[in-house]
Amino acid sequence: MIPLKLLIHHQKTKKSGLTKKKSAGFTLIELLVAMILASLILTPLLGFMINIMQTERREQAKSNTEQEINSALDFIARDLEQAVYIYDADGIDAIRNELPKISSNDKRKYFPVLVFWKRQYIENAIGIGVNSNTCERQPDRCDDTFSYSLIAYYLIKDDSDSTWSQAARIGRFQISDGYGDSDNAKDATKDSGFKLFDLTGTGDLKTKMNKWESGTYTRNTPDILTLVDYIDQTQINNNTNPAPAACPTGMQQIPKFTGRGNSVATGDVRTASFHVCVDSINTAAEIYLRGTALARIENTPPDYSENAKTYFPQARIRVEGRGFVFTK
Image 1 (cartoon, rainbow, N blue to C red):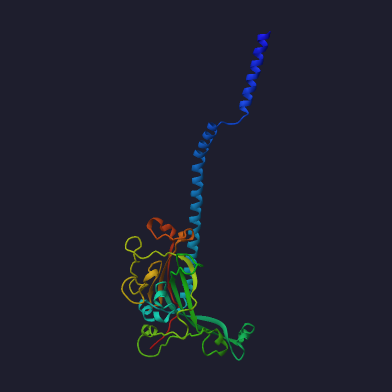
Image 2: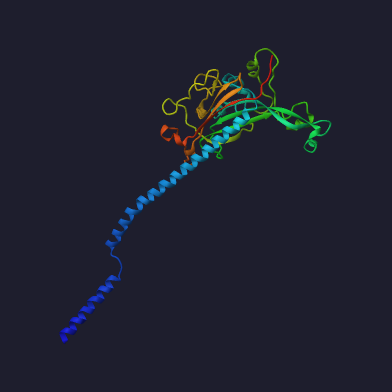
């Protein structure tokens, strides 16, 4: 009986020790193996999730850029539909020094790509024997009129303003005669320094329009309001970003990328992301825009390349002005 009791006691002690060992936790080797297995499973999943998030960011940036490019093009088109005269490359060369931003440094950063005169119809604007403020209450006692404005759309590459991205952008300048000089009640709406084109003298319409001289406004410090940001800033080169193809017959390209003169893009604005083809005789223009979606998610915007062109949305439109001016 004594040996049997010793054997039973020994078995109980052995089981108790095993229980204590099992309840003590995992060994270091077991933990290392578990961590290796977990990393082998989680690392690919984590990379997959990061890739999905990056793709989503790029697609969202692309969608936003496409919408803004199309909206800007629609805005320019509606503006241009009221044009009575559009300056071609010869015209830009002739009047460049009459437009804003004429210093040598500004010309490297600001280029007037699309410049035109427009005539805007204004309903019930001039009071007949009444104060002009009465027109809203008594439109039957007021006449319709129109105003002339000089519009200039600039390609801008100026990184000094932190409000905007490091890519290029498009700005809009306007100076207007309000409701005309004949209506004294409306003089307050006339922009200071405005001067209308002069159709007297000799020469054809283009010659006379190219002789326009600005008024007294300060050409170095006018308001050029940003229309759209995130325009591609890639410089023209012969390899990855060549100059655009020649314009259709009868149209001039603005900006020019070869030659000399004020119609040639130089410096920071030497890019084809915003350019036009202009037919001054028929008051028509083709407008080309190219944005850069990657500038929304990268501090330093990458240059255009064929491999990434899907993230550089492009759009174009042809517009003919509905107005015209006469000259002898």
